Image (cartoon, rainbow, N blue to C red; front, side, top):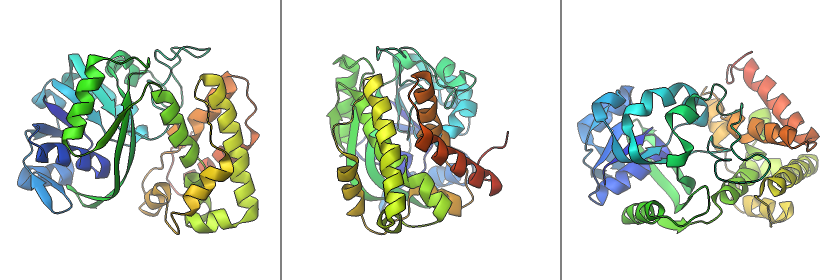
Length: 324
């Protein structure tokens, strides 16, 4: 199977590099210093290098692939997606390794919002047009990685991937893709409720990430403040209510989820790291989308909206979120 990774950063670099290490022909759509590094030394994960099959800044030069892994920040996708159509053939499987609520979330999901495309993550419907939800396998990534430098990914913890058909069906392509990913040394679970897995990860990420941008605090300090901790639980309660109505119920309590985060200690969230580096923060897929879903379902979200408004304004003041 020919694989192409779009976005050979931390997560994309780990996925591409480990598959290439297993002998899978893995191409990369990249640019700038990352493109130069891939051309010079191939994939590099920690200290292990592997050859890259092809690499280019132009998808048309790479052509259609069997599997296309999308590993970019979600806010880049509306502009990027129309340039990816050359990678997508009629039987290509698209695997989005993204954070937050993805564009395909309500495809084949059933319920009141079946087929809904969110303004928060696909405002002009360019993503849906270029990357048809019918060709998507949902994916949830549970690993920690960072970039040591362009083209050099460091896997620091975890190796778990959850994939699944949006419909929940067991298909030939999901079985085949799971085996492909396992060949790269990943622990892969095939889910029959991938939206629930997406929502559960989001439920744990959507509070401390933006709060860390507002406060510049590490996770331990955020959770140790009783007022902030109580606010986090109110946000999580609203998000859980939305999830239950969409068909993605949360079975864990907010207190138990917070206890898991507390055990991780004094870490900086990925959103805080982006903010400190002057990069646009991934707010829309993590928070704006949840607020939009709540509005569409007539679920009150005063705490989610407060978190969204404060973080959005703070980010705009620092040039970390688009104006207008």
